[in-house]
Image (cartoon, rainbow over all chains, first blue to last red; front, side):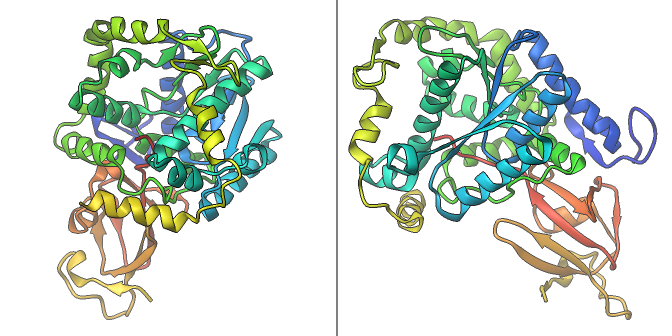
Length: 319
Length: 86
């Protein structure tokens, strides 16, 4: 198999692009796709301060690396989620990436700063762990970006993530969420601009980029996410993709081009009804905001072991 | 020592040299001994793995679908699906 660009030995075949690439041209392909996404969707303007949401996984570290290679002086932020060994490994991997390259990485630890962690929050509030995690991340990345004077928060959501979320939102006709599912969420009072520069790359491609660039990332899956709906949607889409290369890209970008606008009224209506949280000031449908309610209920509670929460949700998903 | 899966290879017995390919799978981590030679695409098919969901790594670099894996190889099949949005 030869590289489509230089005819040298290929290291990867990308069926949806009908292309094979050697290491050099695979890395270039990934950078070009990110540059195109940033340009097409006007994600980042020259000179803007970028905060990258870092998890220690392939997507966030690939994103940080590519933004720097493209000339954006991006800084990182990671959150200590308290999910046992997994979180410790994730934080250590993120710190090592930043230290090896002399980059600035902001650390926020839920237990140290807010006196809770994700397993405990899940148990106490009876939220699905991924829900408590997503809520915490969204609030803290928004807050840190606004407090730190950043213009934009960049997240590592890739094409597979967006296609899986779109499938879930469509299956359940979550019209408000469909109206918000965009590669760029503009800044608004209390919210920084949020961008997804990896939307043109699948996760097989971001993983390949990390391998080829020698980026050490956390391969293990979060123990809290095991078997969740999002993963099942991804598996379903990959079965379709294997039979019909390009199906995920057509699904997501077809939605953006031909359907997303139809759901804007629902998204706008929800956003126009926000008030300021009486505790933290963040925009929220009802005060206090969901994050402050979560902290209020969970802070100070005796820490709950990861295994306890994991088993409970594993049982629930098996039914 | 990993589990020996003769059926995962090309359907032939291991060679007389006593060497078999070592295949490392992740999440959870486990090892299989597979007789070669066999192409990446054939190996993934025999393991019933979707090519869209994994990378195949030999040494420190990626190998494409038509690459021929041999008995001396140590091969990692790395899943690429990650999740955490519910």
